[in-house]
Image 1 (spheres, rainbow, N blue to C red):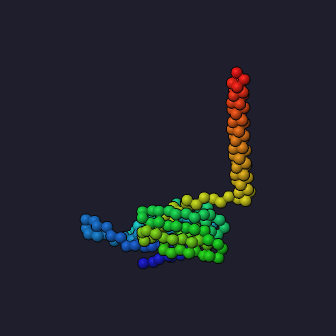
Image 2 (cartoon, rainbow, N blue to C red):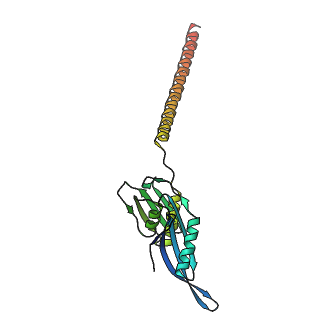
Length: 204
């Protein structure tokens, strides 16, 4: 059946049909044939959505899934043309691993992962699929992985975090040095007291 069909509408949201399957349902009069469509949509700027729907016709299934996917769009944290950090997500036996890549690497992905990353606007990324080969499960695992991405810190924020770490380290070292000095002073005082006691006993 159709696979990775591309469409782009006036609102700049790109649509990809990841997979269309025939499904049968046993009813009283016999078997009922229907179609299931998996559709991914995205604006190419960090927003992506995924949905699955069924209908008696292929076009109907695609339209219903597209409408659902547009309603369920999420915002993904990106770092220029790649993702912010490594991430792994699992869904129903499917395991998807995503890793950021340098500019010019391209989208190193296959199966259901590639169209989702492309409509999201990710241009440089490495990925690996493990476990289930189901495109539906891999699609959901990819969306979960994208949801898990954290935003990157700006340069000023990174400097502040580094400064905080330095100050905490300095404070800890000062506290340790103070404690060691106190321990030394207490030991010295104890030794002096013992020496005084010994002198008094000798005089007696």
